[in-house]
Amino acid sequence: MFRRKTAIHWVAAMAAILSIVPASAGEENLDALQSEARRAAMRLLEQIRGEVNRELDQTGPIRAITVCKYSAPEISSAISRQTGMRVTRVSLRPRNRMLGEPDSWEQKGLLDFEKRLAKGEKIETLEASQVVSEPTGRYYRYLKAIPMAQPCLACHGPVAGIPEGVKAQLAADYPHDRAVNFQQGQVRGAVSVKKPLD
Ligand code: HEC
Image 1 (cartoon, rainbow, N blue to C red):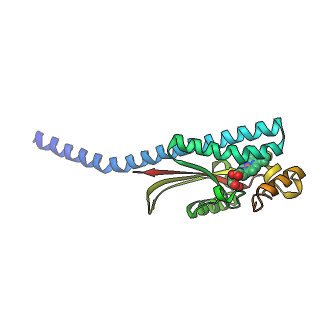
Image 2 (spheres, rainbow, N blue to C red):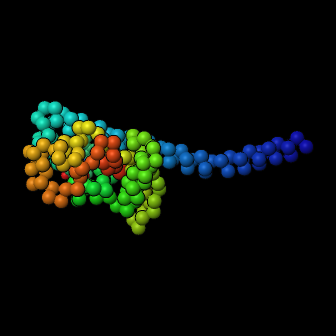
């Protein structure tokens, strides 16, 4: 009698464990992936912001264009190399189409951020993530909104407010520039993180 009861408890316990483990392990995994992606995204934003602000303070916006042009892609590749994830900045209206053009998953996410912002969500907390299957395999994808802030106006704000020298430099470097006329508080773009899953 005692043995039978113990056996039933054991079976019940095993069933409980088996039914819980796969679900919670999956969740833990996604949580870990999200914090890893979030950390990489923050690192990119902080490093670029640090470089741009230093240049704006020390030498002004024209020199800061060079920082954006050369340092941002460099910081982005360094973080990608170190983390094994592709960490980039994308936008629905990119300045540099080669690096900033979003793929279809990123386009959907960016459009969704704009809707969520219009509905009253805080821009600082806008993020999206998903495990997706693509022809080359499974990926964890993560997107975090980049807010248009005050220091960005000199190069991405309404054209009338952009200093003449900056305007001339941008016209020379980026004849297909679409990244102007943003208002403070809008979604300027997003950091996109893409991690291959085994
Ligand atoms: C001094 C001018 C300057 C300032 C200030 C500046 N940017 Fe940029 N930004 C650029 C340039 C130039 C590029 C294109 C870089 C490249 O060639 O990849 C760029 C590219 C970007 C991109 C990548 C997508 C795209 O459009 O190509 C994002 C996102 C971005 N900037 C956001 C910001 C934000 C947010 C701020 C304020 C915190 C800011 N920028 C301030 C000049 C500037």
